[in-house]
Image (cartoon, rainbow, N blue to C red; front, side, top):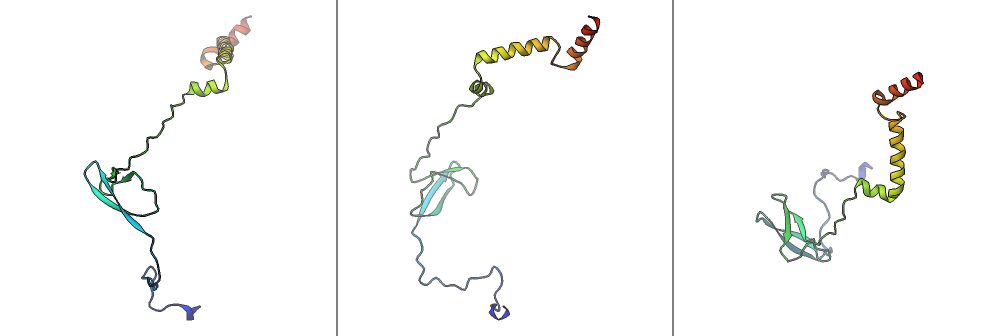
Length: 128
């Protein structure tokens, strides 16, 4: 392997290939302007879909295309609440029945905070 190494070459150095016979892809310059007034150009392929928005390299704000390409309006989904997700699994009648059942257990001392109900339930059973 030692006889195949290139003497005088360093890692990350220059390439020994030349550009003869290489055909570069067609390119275009796309201009953008941000709200701060910064204007800049990005080199892109002719075949690329040109984005309507690009991040400004100076301030980081959104820059709009100077070619008149408008950003697409995204359809926003309404926020799903806990109640919406609950109604996907159960009907309101089922939920009312479950609520009544849990309230009876809570009032009877079967469930709930120990310091409020369970001690009182034991006393009631002992006195009965």
